[in-house]
Image (cartoon, rainbow, N blue to C red; front, side):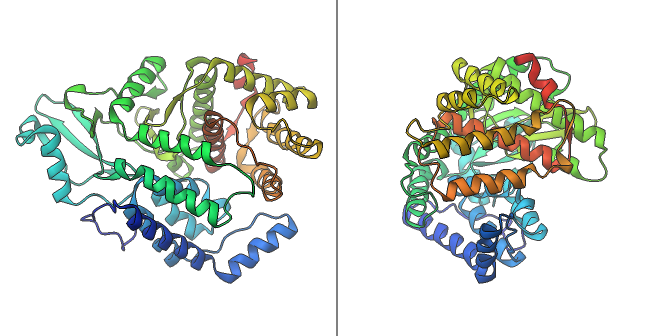
Length: 441
């Protein structure tokens, strides 16, 4: 994090009014950082059809990220999503700072940590360990991760939940709902209630380490002994409601493959493997990890394997939903406008009461996005598809075309698809998506 972050940690704000105050301050920091010039740029881009690049100063960005990092919880999740592809919307300097939200929150104070460990494991908890690193190796929105080695030689990653975060989820969602409804953050007439309720449920699920352990074990069984992927095992004897004990895995966040020290072949392979895994989740597993945070994928250069982490956001995918996506892909490949409308209705992308112009605009947007399914290798590094989708989708959003949201599971799957798109773009990868999809069609 930046120098403004206290490495010793600060208590998590837990009361709703306190968290609303911090969230309001963060919003103010962001607005002040954009400034009048930034607002004019956004207006100009709206008129010209170009993608705006928000000119946030490094200092304003640090204030914003520091505030969210201190809060943790649901509002930090929001900041993580904003940082996913920040290079497209923010200046490079601001994007680099925003990216720290993906894996670096403020750690909890040592006093809180030791009390939590005693409460979960008992006063003599340290006797089970040969080594325990009190400085966390990572800290995110829900908890922080510590390395440890048990007396019997197991190398573990211990995911320890921040005190108060689970209890603050409801107030965070209520605060975000208040800001969304009162600051014009959503189109007039859109009912964001169902999506916010699903977000509330999913955040409670992410804070339920017993549920995450079950999802992790199920996903590990589905992946099996795969030479390309590693899913850590759960260590039940040291796992509690607030601590999840797993195998420790070496590696760097997958987006580090964009650095020059890694080859194009490594980038292409990693992106291809993760896109193939996403399709297996949708069509084979019936279980999807829907959080596209790049930090949830580690690359182990020594073994060339991708480590899969964080299954708090794992959701079941109904078989009929996979069939609807299959129909959508087939219609897109056949340039079948009627089929695209039918599949869009089934998925909830299109409101049955939408007028013909809105339906045609949505079909055009889907056709545009299906460009990635062109036969042969698609070069994400040379593509401007993101900009074209951004402009076309933004215009529909501003014209209140999206007044009815799909079912929440569809929204979260869309988040996963977008996350994979962003990762391929970040890695400047070349991926033959059509070849990966064809076996499922």
